[in-house]
Image 1: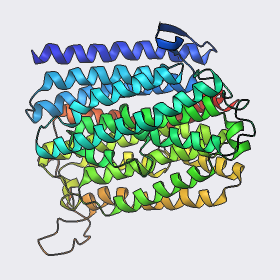
Image 2 (image 1 turned 135 degrees about the vertical axis):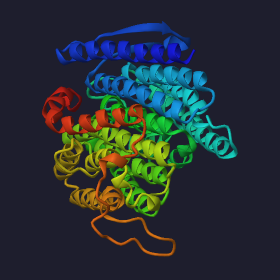
Image 3 (image 1 turned 90 degrees about the horizontal axis):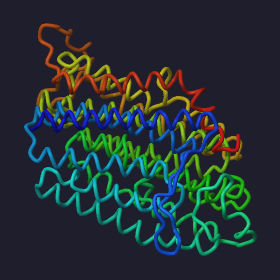
Image 4 (image 1 turned 180 degrees about the horizontal axis):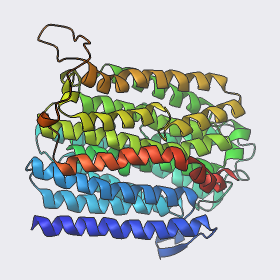
Length: 474
């Protein structure tokens, strides 16, 4: 019963939004709602507590889950995809896991739901069932589980042995036990950064491009709703509540990882420029953009942490818009290569306008919300005395212009190239509104909503900045 299945998905999404908004408002008034679900071996609790960063992530994930569910209905029906019941069931488990990550009160709880998120999204990555999907699924599961069990879990055990707790605590829990501990803070931080491979910091990033074999709604979910956002959220939360910004600054533990993040930003952008497959280009863009959050955390300044928090929201809105536009293009015209999109703006003007807005947010151009995180990260770099980081951020934005904004420009202002010829700019084809060939309504409405959200974030940046101030000690 597809109608019942999809109605249940939408109702669950609406209820989840209501719940997370109530918690968001309570946290904004100074409350920290939470509870202990159960206590397991060694007295370690599975516990939940909402704080500003987690409350923001939970609302973001729940809102985008509902939008992505609408999009999935249009996309899966238009493509007559198989195994749709399993698809929606895994989606439901995955969003529940993401909310668990958002509200986790300690590292043990975060690890539990982090692993649940990996396992529930693996069937989504392998949904098509062909050889490419199975290979992508093996890389996805192997790298994410291997790093979490081999690096993240030992880091959590190490923290517990040092501090006697894994609770997320304002100011961190490691400053006293690791005072004058030499290289120990840097080593422990490295275990966390590379153990949380969902943050896609090089060199533990290869699962993300390989996951592009999944249907477009899954790609949007991976990049904007839950998976990678859970990764960078975990990195930022660990930096703020386990290590503490002041402790990271005093020890310089994040200095080397700051430059690994900067290198990831530039290398991934350079690779994205040479990808003709649209989804692959967007995937490499995500590797680059996620490293902005890690970079913000490693700056060990208040502005860096706040910029990283805002980047989570801004990137989610922009990248989800881009992926859903890519899916709409495939549904309407079966085109997957960037080189095939020249001149297509005459047939899909709305889709490419939405793509342009999403690209503006990723680049960091006003009036899209993505401009504010870049600004705050630059301020954070200046506060830390890392002026070269400002150059990295500027160069990355210029590369983003080349590989993202060129797509709608060529779609509107270039005619399709004939075989063996280079495309020629000619003002493009005039739009004939009688010959518009857009994707079905449910493939166009969701990216319109996320594009609007990307624009609204430009206006909502100050309230959100003030909401997140407590994570930076403000």
